[in-house]
Image 1 (tube, rainbow, N blue to C red):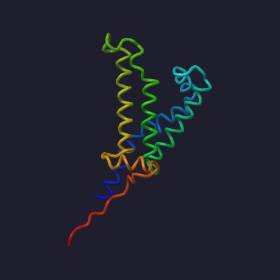
Image 2 (cartoon, one colour):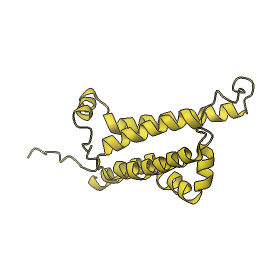
Image 3 (tube, helix red, strand yellow):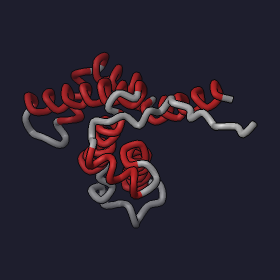
Image 4 (cartoon, one colour):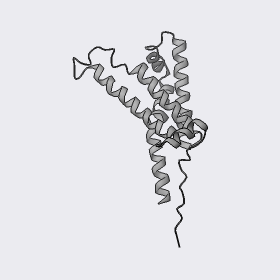
Length: 160
């Protein structure tokens, strides 16, 4: 049962970061020019766009590794939640195409679902950050670099 618990905890965390590590990070490395081009949609300077892509690559790799390993995983998940929100606001602007209400198959509708998916993924990271109860929230603010110890299994005491 202990191995199943640890395996399930690992699988959940892998599922949360899978978008970023390896896929999005690898895409940034293999298609750096294309990523910079996409970032230029949000900022006009190619130099700033390249800097944003490099910062995004750092976040995707190192914060994902923190979530996976449990090392400062709460802080790493907090950064990833913010990253999800920022990328939704910068690149999933469903309100810009102007076809959200006029077309069921328009670009606005497609972007809307991607926008919501980003925020839902961010919420998943916030569950790692803050936990599911008020005590866990206050613990994060008191010790933001602490680990949630995701692979620790509490030993139940069995009465003789």
